[in-house]
Image (cartoon, rainbow, N blue to C red; front, side, top):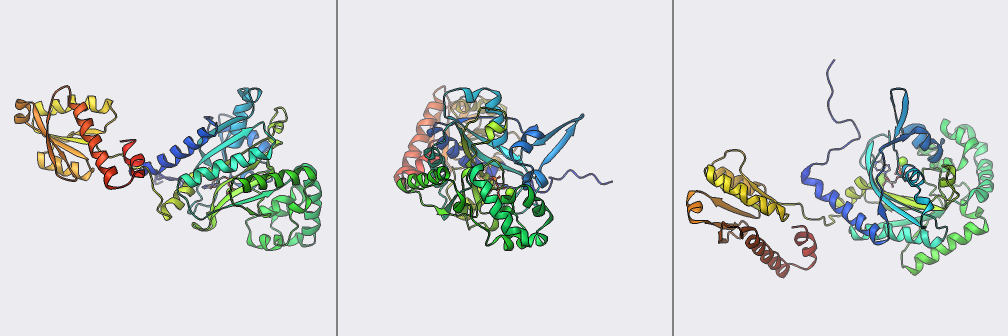
Length: 444
Ligand code: ATP
Ligand code: MG
């Protein structure tokens, strides 16, 4: 039998040449979340399967069709299909919910869902997500939505719509479920098998069905907004007011129900039409019942998840700016063993200062070394041979301009190099504009 060691369908490799794109998203998301008072949480990739059954919900697509459940020595686990369940489990298990409220955490994680792979829909994908627990105020909803919007804005995304809806609380939903059942019952036989079951167990899930036939039937279904109780209706009205105050534009979209069962009241999505059907780059909402459902004290909470691969698709398409990829700052081309040893000595200090410094490890001739330096886009090069060693100085060449400058090969080398580098960055700012500084200067 042929051995297959290829990458599984629906997974991706990220190569060093593209990693700056991931760093850009992670850095901006992290910094924005921190500026809103969120701290990073790390938690396991797999959890007990029951955690997801209890939180995500047994009638959702995720649980019914998409979970990666693995058995290891009689114990069953599930690779997390989303972040909220594990994050809340960790907050509960570590007592965070007994501390000062609101508790605010964010995470950058991989998630696993057995879906049909296509652009923007993977089996292993990555999310930036966050959760806020303790506040039932619509101000918290506005805060979390504004945070998500801030990240998308700072990433430079354009043509993104914010869709919001309220799916009410269990009280208003009881009436709504009745209305949905009454609507779908006469056409029950035309529904897909999953939806037949949903009609009995969880009729709101019918609105989330991806089958075109079922969608057509659901087209004129009653909308939840007409069934909200007074409290839920007030909550939604206040949220809209806060968003208006913050000049965050939104579309009320009663079709959004979200793919996970734990949501209550506010749900929202940030959607772009730029990458086809997989246009939801961020989805979230309030889940006031979940913490209690997982064994904690009743605690209102909310959060969102952003698909990093989807963000990348949109950012590439819209040619958004990324942090500059790291380049080699200085490459030493060496002739002979003594020169190589000198280079080894010089890079030590440079690297400690954060520069990317390289020298030949392939035993190449000087011409081939320079060719390599060019290929990796070295900002500076320096040739060291016997002459340079004897004189204790060598020429630092700025590759773009070809300008050369003599530098002493002594203990001040790194300080002098830093001086040169800094002057070059200042020139770049003069020539281009100030925003360049953040991208090329800051991280060197
Ligand atoms: P969709 O309706 O697009 O399937 P969802 O409702 O299942 O999304 P959530 O569970 O809310 O998605 O996950 C939050 C975000 O994670 C989504 O908005 C999307 O950006 C991203 N995401 C979800 N599933 C995938 C996937 N299979 N591949 C890549 N990104 C995904
Ligand atoms: Mg989905």
